[in-house]
Image (cartoon, rainbow, N blue to C red):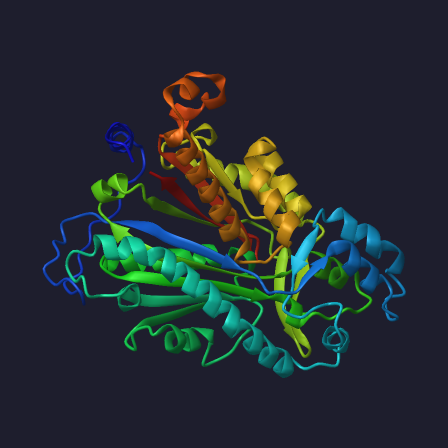
Length: 437
C-alpha cells in the first residue's frame, strides 16, 4: 500500500465513529508473556477459504429427478416450477442426487444414526481441504510479521478451533479430526456451534473475536461445514420439496487474529469492529430446526419473507446508529443468500440497489443455500473483487487514472466499511460490522 494511501486511511480511521474495543486485561499469554496489556487489539480476518463437494448437479436436472419420484403425487405438478423459481443454476452435494446411493437415501427409512455416520464420512475430507487452504493463506502474513518467535508455524499459533454445523452431530467431532490431521496443538481450546442454522458463522466469529481479544498473540481457526444432502428425505410434503430445492453443501474456514490499529492500517487488514445479534419479536415459527428419526429437518414458515421484510431494516439501522453510521456509510453489503425471497425482502427492507446485493445473488445462483458457510462465501467474493480492483488501479498509469476508465480510482484506495448478516432460528438476525483498511 502506498504511503499516501496509508496516511489517508489512518486519518479516516482516527476520525471514525466506531466504538473502540475494550483494553485487554489478561495476565497470561502462551507466546508473549511480556505483552503490554494497555494496548487495544482489533480482531482481524487473516484469511478466508471456501470449498464444495465434487458432485455438481444442475437445478433443472434435480427438478426432473424429484418430479419423477413415485411417492410425490400431491406436489408433482408444482416441483419443476418451484425449482425454477429458486434462480439457482447449480448446487454441489456430497451425496449425488443422480446416483444409486442417493436414491437409496431418498426414502424415509434411513435412521438418523446412519445419516450421521455418512455425515462424518464426507465432512472430514472437505473440512481438511478447506482448513488447509485457510491456514496456507494466513501463514505467509504470519511468518512475515511474527517477530517474537520466528520458529513458530501458523499451526502453533492456533489457540482455539471453532467448528460450526447444523446438519451433522458427531462426538468426538470433526474438530478433533482436524486437530490430528492439521497438526494443531493438543492444548488447543475447542468450541462447537450447533443448530444455529444459516447464522451460525456469525456466532462462530463472535467466539473467535472474543478469544483473540483476550489472547492477542493467538489465532483462531473457524470451520463452518454443512451437508444438507445427507439429511435428504423426499416425502410428499411441500416443505420438504422447498427446502431440498434450495439447500446444498459447502464449507468455509476463517483464520482470525488480532493486532493494534496502527498495524491493521499499515497492512490493510480486514477488521471486525462489532457484532450484531437481535431476536425478532413473535417470529418463533419463522425458522424451526428439528431432529426426526430419519434425519435433521428444517421447517420454514410462510411468514418468513414478511418477517425479514418488516424486521431487517429497522434492526440494521438501529445497529448502525449505535456506531454513528447510516446505510450510506456502508460500502459492502453481505446479505445471506438464503433464497430469492430472503435476498429480495432484505434488499427491500434496507432500500438497497441491485448492485449492492449482486454478490449474494451470484453465490445463490452458483451454489444454492449452504446454510452457515454461505455468507462467508459472499464476504470472500467481495474481498477478492475489492483486492482485484485495488491492484488494477495501482497498476494503471497516470493517464488511465485521469480518464473515465478509472473514475473510481480514488474510492478504491479508501477504507471500505461492510456489514454481513444471516438469519438464525427464531428468527434471529446475526451479523458483523467490518472494515477493509
